[in-house]
Length: 336
Image 1 (cartoon, one colour):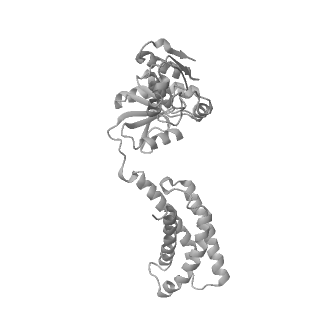
Image 2 (cartoon, rainbow, N blue to C red):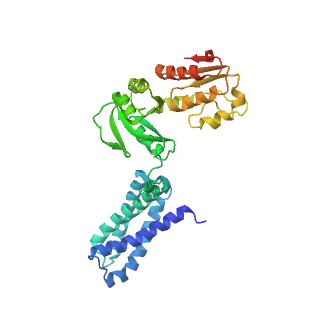
Image 3 (cartoon, one colour):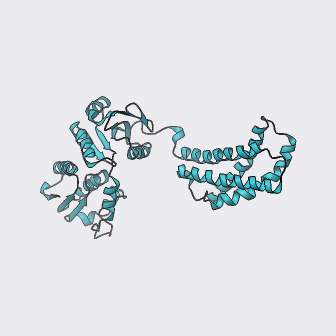
């Protein structure tokens, strides 16, 4: 099997040749004189000698096309710019004739467009962006927040078959009517009850970890008062504190009881023998991951379940849910 790095390298070399002829074609008003066509062979050899090592050493083939980003585009621009300056210097040094100056400008521009465009086109194809989203039949959900965290959440939910984001709400209504990844900002969080009834929504996701604790609490309280089930996207501080603490391990499989990046269901399933009739401690149970983890733990009837949460409202919410649905004695809950 041909290595993917080699395929990407050969693609860029082919783009190098095609863009040179395209620049000549544009320079001569969509006609390519025979003289230019014949002399181009010498220039192409120089282009490959200069561009190829620069591309390799500038790290153009360390990235993965599936995750092409602005950083990859920046790397392409820098590499092509250095190579273009090297080609120009070589042409002047060796006094190579019949090379129009405008071609030396057009060629790197076309090259950046082709090399960058092909990478982003491949990512769009892999992300199924060319074929639309597949969340048309999922459960409708409102996202509270319209910042970076909300954008990342929408990106992940684009391909969810379970949930369908029907709109976003934020603290103010100043950006109402605008869109984030094709989802409209409907208005302010204070109007969540109106939109929930209008759109027949039963669930909301608070995706505003950059906001203050008071702001997130207001958003959660508004959603709860509207009768919605609330999930939260934890802040980076919450994740770091959860990951860096030392958690008890399961006596059976030696896995940690809490993992911020593990799938709760199969992780807890493997630890079932170590949870039944045992004391369990769950930090940050108010977040979307922590709350689901607690629900999974409760299924195995622990002797004592200690919930440690900085947000009093989030702790109250999960405690009320567990007190209602907990099998056995609800007094096994210990709140902190």
